[in-house]
Length: 323
Image 1 (cartoon, helix red, strand yellow):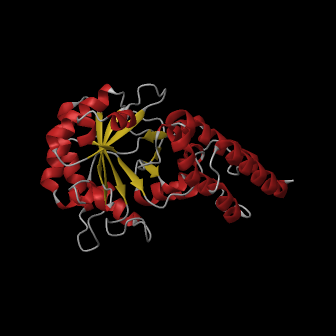
Image 2 (spheres, rainbow, N blue to C red; image 1 turned 90 degrees about the horizontal axis):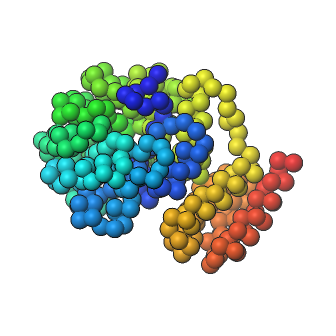
Image 3 (cartoon, rainbow, N blue to C red; image 1 turned 90 degrees about the vertical axis):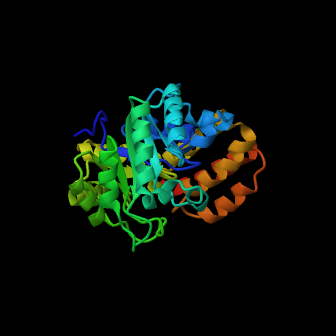
């Protein structure tokens, strides 16, 4: 079953500072799934800020990338959507769900759940500005006293969105508690356009359970992919009934981590890549034996030679468990 022109029912969620080109490339290398960029600020993109333009530039990626934009001004949104299209975007996703304070304080992200008139103007302006399919990602509402996801979804549909993604939490929840799949199901019943469900999907069975319980057309997976870029492909295989190995070996974890670090170095250069690699090391070794000691050793490294030595020593140590 496809959604619009996508071959997969699984989407990698846009995550700021995470779903950059190295992460997208790695996720794609494992197989199926649809890929969304980290969010791109429209005010910086319109100014053609070099760093932001580079984030939005997906022209040399040999797989479709949906570029996510965040901001408030509808005219600037239209201009930025055109720029994103020129930079190779396969589609445009509008972020109306980010709960982070600095985004919300700029009347962007989840703030727009409180301003449906402006949200509608933004969507309409982007739809008119580009022939690309336009989607909107949003939450259930500002807080539990102001849940308006059904009303918001209908507004998105009426404003011309091709499909929507609903995170089953409010802005006040951030990422805590349990995602409300029943609320996602209500959204699905309220509109005719495809709906993607987001929240608490960690593997194939949970993805299948969300689709069954809510009737959504596809699922989006975010935090569960941290240190597990193979997960999108695993879920895609599970939903398609394809054979796959749900177990990743210690050697596969090590080789994937090393590949991720290599991609970070190629993209950012050694200094930035080493700093960024520290968070990835924490994620890749989560749940492994003596992971705390490994993390403590890794964060003390000051160059890649010593970093790779620490990685080798640790994975040789935990690899003994599989023998």
